[in-house]
Length: 353
Image (cartoon, rainbow, N blue to C red; front, side):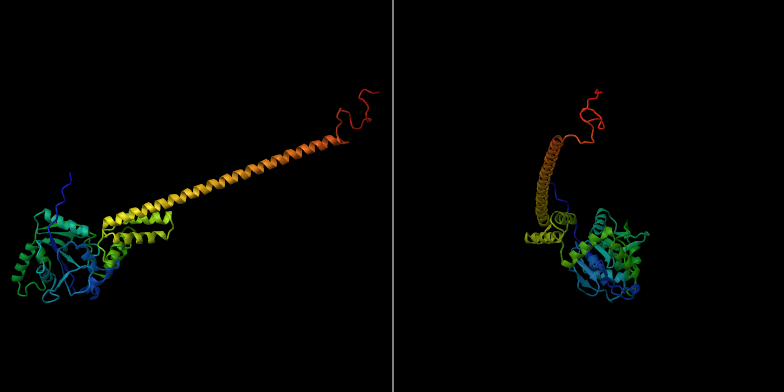
């Protein structure tokens, strides 16, 4: 029996606030500042890519993901005015509300926020930072609750929502909190930017960050299994030659694209290339073992021949030396064969008188 498909999540939208003045960065266009090779705004857009509609409240600019653009009226009217403008361009019952300066926000964190919102009855779910402070711009909310309280705040102030602080809205909402000091980290100063860039280059993060940056740059949405690709590169490098590693992974990607792309196509191409690398390595090992055996046999034969020749020569030498000694007889100063003293009369018997 086939397992029942997992229930799908309700559709949600996203509002990204990216029009702040960035005073602590000296007026620098903060959403465009690059961390890990990508603009901060693009990093946030990648994390909320599952949204049905993503609205960015800022002046339009090129982005790696399609978005809708809007501005608060007047521009620079503050976070509540910007949030209200963004909400007007959304239709889903749930909405992510995010700032554009979150270098470590991930799809997993976004799912946690949404899952907690769907599972409960609160108006919203937000992250808290390492010090326990609320981060209302890293959150998922019920759109109706936001619209209701924003309308009340606007009606209570002569200038509407312009210039009003965010905490006026947050204080009216029933909220669930999730502590995540990494995902909630935002870049307000150049020191924050430097810290984010340093963390990305740490050994435990750099590969995932690089893959994400490369996919973003190349416009690829594929969920890459880096473990399989690294294993293939290792097998090609060790079993064939080091330059074979990058060339093989390139060919795998090309083959997968020709097969229609997708995770399955990549896995199939990787499996074929890995099997080839394995066969290649075994063939080389068999050939080396065969050559080693042949060399050993030749050496053994040579050694036996040399030993035999030496033995024959030695035996021959000993035999001819003995013949020469027998022919010559005992030396004159050597002991007599019959035990007579060499200084006795030649041929005299011991008992002769």
